[in-house]
Length: 129
Image 1: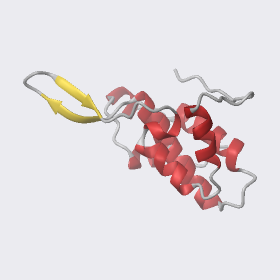
Image 2 (image 1 turned 90 degrees about the horizontal axis):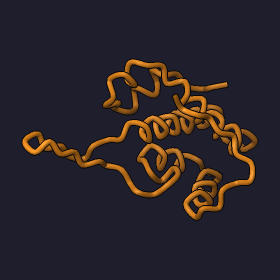
Image 3 (image 1 turned 120 degrees about the horizontal axis):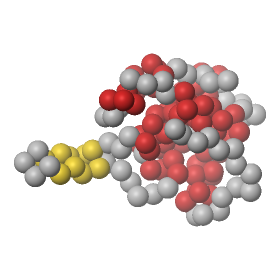
């Protein structure tokens, strides 16, 4: 069961896509919740810390869908995206924040596996609309 709401996620990130900004972020939140439950539920982390991690992971999944620009030029109609080319949680500031909050190191280890192409044998997947 999700620990955060769409409004809480929208409070920590700026969403450029107006359709996405007006929509329910449940698919992103549900994915974050699955990740927290899979990797952190049996840890000694407090409920409030699990909620904070889920919040930042939700923001991470939204940002994967709605890339953030670092610079825009109106005259030449160019956009430069503030988006790392790395995979996994390292790809966004929000994902990095979630890893930093996880004092068990579980998310960082999971992220390292993804970056090295060592995907887990069993993964729960949620497809975004």
